[in-house]
Amino acid sequence: MKVLVPVKRVIDYNVKVRVKADNSGVELANVKMAMNPFDEIAVEEALRLKEAGGADEVVAVSIGPTQNQETIRTALAMGADRGIHIEAPHEVEPLAVAKLLKAVVEREEPGLVFVGKQAIDDDCNQTGQMLAALLGWAQGTFVSGIEIKGDSATVVREVDGGLEHLEVKMPAVVTVDLRLNEPRYASLPNIMKAKKKPLDSMSADELGVDVTPRLAITRVEEPPAREAGIKVSDVGELVDKLKNEAKVI
Amino acid sequence: MSILILADHDNGQLAAATLNTVTAATQIGGDIHVLVAGDASGDVAKDAAAIAGVSKVLTAEADAMAHGIAENIAPLIQSMASGYSHLMAPATTTGKNIMPRVAALLDVMQVSDIIKVESADTFQRPIYAGNAIATVTSSESVKVVTVRSTAFEAAAAEGGSASIEAVDSGSDSGLSSYVKSELSSSERPELTSAPIVISGGRGMQDGSNFAMLEKVADKLGAAVGASRAAVDAGFVPNDYQVGQTGKVVAPDLYVAVGISGAIQHLAGMKDSKVIVAINKDEEAPIFQVADFGLVADLFDAVPELEGKLG
Image 1 (tube, one colour):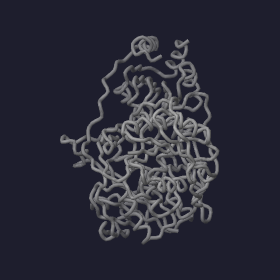
Image 2 (cartoon, chains in turn yellow, cyan; image 1 turned 120 degrees about the horizontal axis):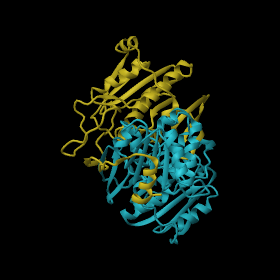
Image 3 (cartoon, helix red, strand yellow; image 1 turned 90 degrees about the vertical axis):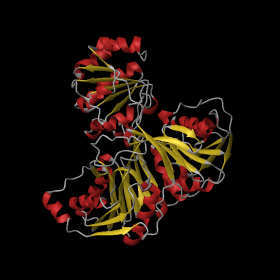
């Protein structure tokens, strides 16, 4: 079985994002970029499945400008076998991403797609569900555990009330949550090896998908800042402030 | 204009976040209908019909609707979509699971997790873990929208008298089936709607130490939460997690104990009205958002706090 893992290039999670002065978006120039942390977990899960004999090839795909090839190389350095880069503008909406991925799925025919449950830039949490819808496949979302048995998989989902176990028919789209695994670091030899692994490039046009945005982002601004508070000297003062000043207890 | 809201429920009870979604819909304006897709969920339909501002409740009752299976519920909503200007759901794990599937079936882009309604087609939503707020306009024929419940007041749960109507209950796609749930049971208020939340972080050192927070919570009528670090360390279950990828809370009082204040945690609680931080590291970033900071060893401060609350 082949596993497809879409990986998104986002601002590194350690970087404090800055809103552009003209409120048109956030500053991306000269900012450290990295693979979306949830997608790293997806790559790791695909690799573990392969190592356990449950998959024979792991293919990483990324959509965006040429620099996205670096993100694919990261996945290859972790251990993915092959990469596909779909050349597109930086901001492609989840619906268009799902359509592009559908086209890739139709070419590659994977048995499973592992993808991060959300990207930490737009925080949309849509792509996996949309891809499953377009393919008419089962979806397991926010998954922190998976066990594959023949033509179905049992997934453990992190839901508001706790955990939920679902049986999903394969092929399926599985969106992964934080506690599924801890992704490995790529070793230096593997980073070198990754440079020689195959990486195909194609354009969104070649896949016949219109990536024109459907939504217009008219303004991006900083959230209202909280006013700095005070330090209290002891628990007694804290309780007094909460009772008599803030009046919340 | 008319709006269809997907109710979040467990067949017995309507989730509170549905009420906040009704308020967001009221701000858009138009007729508000609520869809209760479930099994033996008659009580939920009655509760939905009593919400102020709802004019009609539509029920779809079937085995296949019982467990919020997106592959079964999304086609049902798709089949009902014509005639509605907006399809909405609370941004709970149920809404987040189902609505993007609905949007893709309708070939429209969803607007996720709105925190403000500017007009019928323009909304504000947080991006980058709430470090920026985007204003987004949708020109889609039907707007698919999920709503961050903490950003909208709850609609009155009583006072409405909507009609209840059964609709075609859809079918089982045969793609996914429910196996079981492992739900945390607690006598304490639900995290996302509690007026007071007390959360523990890595500084708690061990899951058993959360008993200290529970004692304080019981005196205050508070819910207990946790940072991602505490959940990852296995101190408490996942449903305690407050943050960008966990639950978003905005109580009257949020008490952060032994939590350093990583960006992704702040994203889940910085809209709380009053924030208290108890941490022995005076450089911890949590103090930058705290109204009242106490630099102290939590193992001394928390029992003392409990004692002083009498």
